[in-house]
Image (cartoon, rainbow, N blue to C red; front, side, top):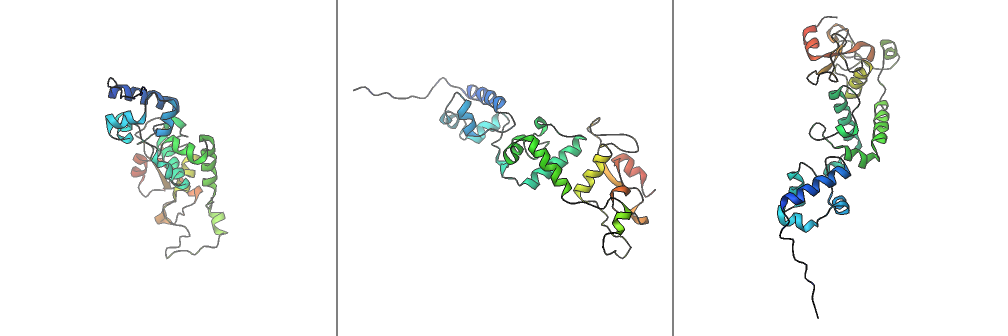
Length: 223
């Protein structure tokens, strides 16, 4: 009786394994790769990676990939991150631009949580509309709100959704100089009161504007 014994491929090198990881990652897409996805497309067994690198995680790290564990993030965390990336770019992000560390979460995390990138963008639009802030002083006067000791009916700092809405309205450009992260990645945008808070200005959309950091710091407390 003859026995068939499977011996390890002694000629297999780390570089062979890494090259195949890179190949499969391009097929799958994104900056993360799950072991189960590699096994569908890859040439080599998991044990080969374990023997050469110790763990699957270390093999992925060797080619700059991760395991996509950020899929455990909540929908709100993903949508808040999408907002932050949108502001940094000064425009709507593309699927391939959602990469770590520029983005806290990879594009595959969005596809996993929402089904695909388009559905993630639709969820983001709905997320922005969940809280409707007063757009004008007139609409604010119709809302029953208690004024603070200085007479303000709104908080000084706009929340993250209101900041995003103001920047989107202003096309993510400084209304003073036209600077935009879409043109220059060094541009940092701020949301500023047109009528200063110290002079009675309220935090409503019509009294907010987008300024770059340089213009905002130079403006000071001037109307």
